[in-house]
Image 1 (tube, rainbow, N blue to C red):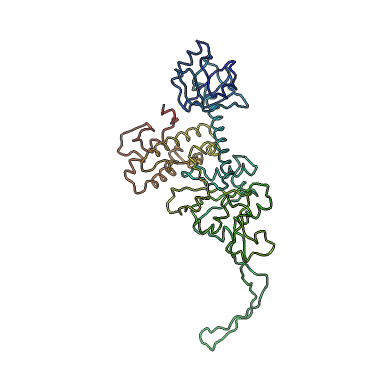
Image 2: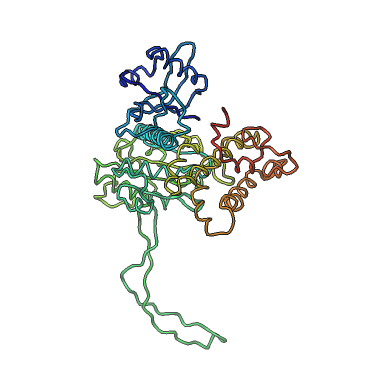
Amino acid sequence: MSVWKIRIYELPLENIRLTKCLDINWYSDDKRSIIHEQINKVKHGDYIAIGGSRTVQAVGIIDNASHEDSEIRFINIWKIDNEFKAADNGKVFYNLENDPDAQNKTIEIVNHILQEARMEETFKLLEKCMNLVLTGAPGTGKTFLAWQIASAMTGDPNPMIEENELKKHPHIGFCQFHPSMDYTDFVEGLRPMTLDKEVEQSKVEQSETDKEAKQSKGDKKTKQIGFELRDGIFKEFCRNALKEPKKTFIFIIDEINRGDISKIFGELFFAIDPGYRGIKGRINTQYSNLIEEGDVFKEGFYVPENVYIIGTLNDIDRGVESMDFAIRRRFTWKEITPEYTQDDILKKKITDNGLRKRAKNRMNNLNIAICKDKELGSAFQIGAAYFANLEDYRELAGDIFTKLWTYRIEPLLREYMRGQDNVEKRITGKDEPKNTDPNSDSNNYLSAFNTETDPQQNQQ
């Protein structure tokens, strides 16, 4: 990917934003010839900075640039609130590769805008469908994104806020499914309790060596054990949501496919359906006959209309429960690719800008190689979470990326490829001719991981 700068002089920026097209014929002959010299180098998806000779007032993404039609068409153009400086090299249209500050600023702004747009799309999807499952490759930040969505929709849109703080939020609930979890944990069930009443219990006289040898053990005071009906985590959350009907409540279920879904939800399959939210979706739960008079759910449990559910799922995990169609039908599914949360995760975890860029390029090059592997494919890409703690390896001797590869990336790839053919060759390139092109079909994973150039530049 390249980043370009174009001067627009007196041409109204608003006109370009509305038409998403810049007519090169508007420029004088000498300036038009300068643009034509560069226009064939422009690629679909390149970023562009638009402004005066030394400033940038708008950024965008190029759709295509045509020498024959003398125009540059844009996928989108955004006017920015705070313009920034760009070096003036005297040209009307040029590549910003020699102005890294302006180049990086343009990339940062465009990526931020795109991320906000993706988040807004996800918000609308959740608001409309009420139940959303985020699925994707390992480490893509599905749980991280779920917390971001919950934070924003409950009125605290701070992407850098820690999960531990969000877990204290009164309008956000969280649980992680696992094989031992059941209906009593999630909805309701009988739980043991110690009664307040103390009772006298005379222990029977027992024979030790002879039936006739009896010895009184005396009387002891003991607590009496009983059972009481208690709300599970989700029912308690819904009870709290009813107290504030005008507030948005988000319930996050991490690793939703790691539990026995049918056993955990029970008859809630009906109640969580977006078409049956509220009182019209009342159901009798398994212990409804034990619910006391005056309880808001005495006439039946229902999921309030202000409760939204976000699940996270990694469907390439071995040994986890598959989701049956009954639960799949009640959730909307959104795939989270590594690029979706990449910038947010790396920016939060890696403070060194140069190191963050190197990590991003290595990650992208590695994922290109994984996607081209016919035995793996895009579902097995590696997310930014695997790179998030990169700076921690500074405490160990040796190159930090070598440590990351040795301790995290290579073991994961070997687990992915367990039982497959040519594992060593595909991972390390053993017995393979040296190849430094990360876009080559024969490239091994280690070589791709060690490539720090921008993969989009490699494709040009």
